[in-house]
Image (cartoon, rainbow, N blue to C red):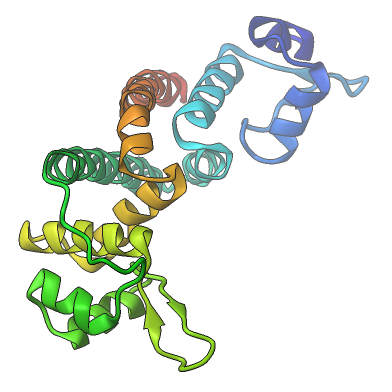
Length: 229
């Protein structure tokens, strides 16, 4: 098989095929006496597996998996695959946590004080936690309150209060701070709980697509491994 034969199947350039071989994502091809590469069905299987892995896991992880396979370190390759599945599971758990938390926060809007901003004491009192707990959430990167330029004291604005309420809810559910930081970051990026609620369906679709891509990539990787002598 020629480079063009492999490239045509995937709509990529022959140079891309050569680059993938040079980068170690494909096994080294034999050469004709005149120096032309000669590919085999095993190379075609490797290219299918690699491109599917890129879709499922990203370029860096896909490359790491293929490097591990070609160096004979199958355990390393499978470890990288497992890590990808673990990350997908964590993302699913994060999505579930966001859905539950958003449902609570949108259904039960907490009362706000008359002023626009809260002090750390007011926020701690509202949540029935200590000020030290609020500061711990800040150290974990979950809360990012501004400071009063005159006094240097923390100032918790409505978005900060929302984030604190969400954090408190998730902590009661047993979620670790690292996980909560991810969830609150999603809310903050979306611009609020209502905006995030609108985006949850798209988030779910992406997770489903990634899971299906991983299934497809696993089958093609297995086929490539079976094609090796």
